[in-house]
Image (cartoon, rainbow, N blue to C red; front, top):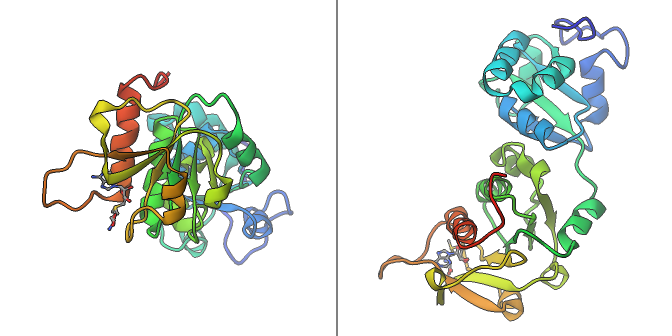
Length: 269
Ligand SMILES: C[S@@+](CC[C@H](N)C(=O)[O-])C[C@H]1O[C@@H](n2cnc3c(N)ncnc32)[C@H](O)[C@@H]1O
């Protein structure tokens, strides 16, 4: 504990002032900010430079013990940020209490900054394009994969909001490690489009370039006509006869892995 961090704050009692009362800060920021649900989401967001105006926990000692064990690199930041409230108050801030009893709000990166990052050339790592995805959990899992492989960004087309709270939950706070935006097919960043489709050329004979846009179709209907028209190559993942397709996030995982082992920019460095 540090002196600057307030102790437990009962939910119904106003805190000492606007800057020291975590619930007042919460109310001020909750509208425009992104919800980081759980210790790991907050840890990742801090690691990748997210601005976090407020973080709340029902168990400060437990959260700091987790930081000591799993994330000493952000322990000091957490120590300065985490305000303790009673568990009931914590639970009132989240859709479903997380086992770590940690929740925070982060400022969403400006769209202009993400668009600049996506358009930046030369591009050293691919951009993942999800063409009209439907499933929020898949989108979150893909953002987590993209972050893990150091992809330049994740672009979605269609109506799904890639910053939807459920997607952010599935992404484990890793939206801040890559550029995540929704665009029309006509607005995609420059670069050769390698679109994944079971009818394409076997990926095992291909090297995917670092500046590729790796595009994946929707869970329900595959690649849209617009995306197919923009594609430079159709690429297939190996699959035995009679199996129709893989899950979307699984397909992204295999494709990024293939990129990484066929000469992709150094991973993990
Ligand atoms: C669940 S699949 C879509 C299935 C859909 N019913 C269809 O008609 O294509 C989602 C996306 O994952 C990718 N995918 C799945 N299996 C694949 C495979 N064997 N080869 C290449 N891409 C695949 C494709 O981009 C596909 O559009």
